[in-house]
Image 1 (cartoon, rainbow, N blue to C red):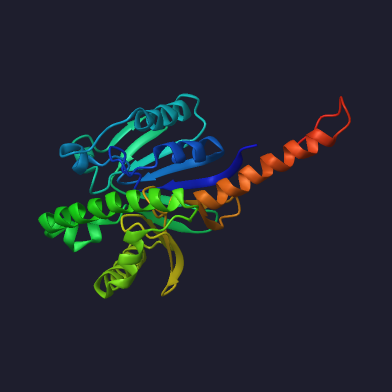
Image 2: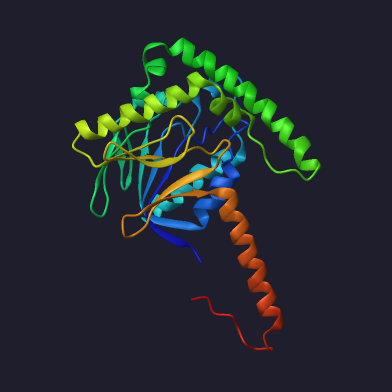
Length: 272
């Protein structure tokens, strides 16, 4: 059965790149439903598509699924532009039925108000020194390429996934400092907008934390960590890690099949 949430936030899917986990994000969306789905930037990677990116059938399937949600009016969908899909600036703001494309969004939780933004507008590198940001993107793309081949090697030997780029980020002092500064600056933005919290993406670091009384929420990415930010009907937020969810889901399916095999003929297993 599909798990229901008040809100699901996804960011940094980077469709158009080899590293994008489009198949996994579609699987996740097919097993979870919500009132509001926020696509918080860098869903499409325009930077890579202009260079050496590749659009696949799975990338198209992602949007087919999104269109199916809007067609059946199953949920409200808000697409916020990021720095990699900045081409959306040409058509913003856009609203068609329950689907809209915006620069930022105010989300009203059960008791709190959140300022929702991809986050790049508050990153001096991507806004004022775009050439450095694109140079960094080249380096990150190389790390992802190396990471993919390294993990293919590990998988053949039965070893778990290992993120080279995440390790590099956490070990480079300036990168750690940048993440901290980014989080603090966004917390200030939320406060200046009279909001209780901030919801963002951009830095590929999923997090839920309190910063000087402001709730900081980052949905992570679907390139490496494969994380979603979800809000239940009571207004509580949680980060779902795809691999952990998939492991639990497969175990549940296995348990269900084992129970069905031992039930007397004619008796069906009813899910509560």
